[in-house]
Length: 239
Image 1 (cartoon, rainbow, N blue to C red):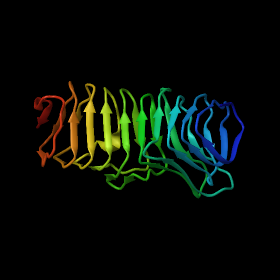
Image 2 (cartoon, rainbow, N blue to C red):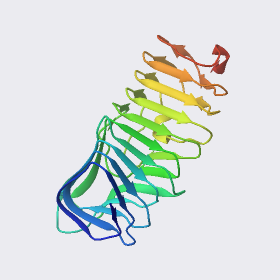
Image 3 (tube, rainbow, N blue to C red):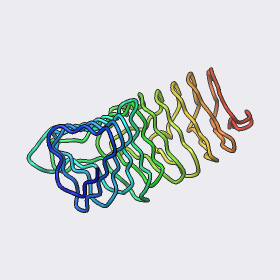
């Protein structure tokens, strides 16, 4: 099914493939559940009324630099984009930024990820809150950044504790709020010739995987149990 514009209203469940390429934005005031593939291309934003909810159990493939926006209309409150454990939000095309944001006052677009966010092109910028970015802790979810791609989080603090699953894969894979990592309790993978340097000591009670031709540098690595590295221990530097 392909939609080039218009509105989505009511309750919508997608079990197949839904494509939309709005030139001027697609407006939704709806409860939407995606169990299949939801493919977004074209220049138009996905405009979601503050009373809407988008639940992703499948693939949301963002092939554009368009935004997710709660509009500056008369509605107020919080719009939830819920990416469940089987859900994948992927930005696969577009060299610019796609933002999760709101216009106007007394509303927000809150992103909740217990599935996978993968940025393979350009950047995804979370202007509004992300449930799993809690103070100095990344609490859950899988976050994958490919070469020359970026995850940005305007409203988040620097996260020094990782309880999620983070992959930095390739040169210039950027997740700046994660650069403060000091305590890994989840899974952290650095691969594809991507190097990572901590600002101080690194304590690990989770899983750290350093791929071939990648280097992780820390002042001191503490309580490294377990350590799983496909590369030789020489890939670890302590300065």
